[in-house]
Image: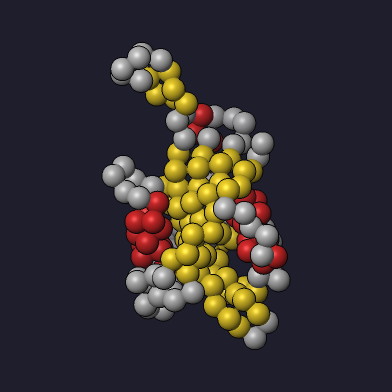
Length: 159
């Protein structure tokens, strides 16, 4: 996305920020992650994904993460841990230039449930060692890094 700088008149590159949260728990097969099956969103429908969404104006990435989890799976009081920031591109439209903030949480209040059935067809726990197919590709990259313990603080995808 591009915007015009009012001070200089120059066209500046802009990115779309989003926050993602992986709820994690220990299960019989090791660490499990809660994923939702996207449906009716127009983006990556039929793929498994985290609770996520755009950071709104005047909102921090952490505030957006908390809001999205509350809106999508009805849990609150998350003990968030920062996982990585990802710059990504689809080399297509300006809106495809993104900066994503990924968080994990191992404790929260409430029982996760589908809040938006028009956008989520299913909600399930999966072992990090046995993820479903398909997972949104850039999220799969992060989940693989979480599984192996090799996820750096700054990542890129699509370059």
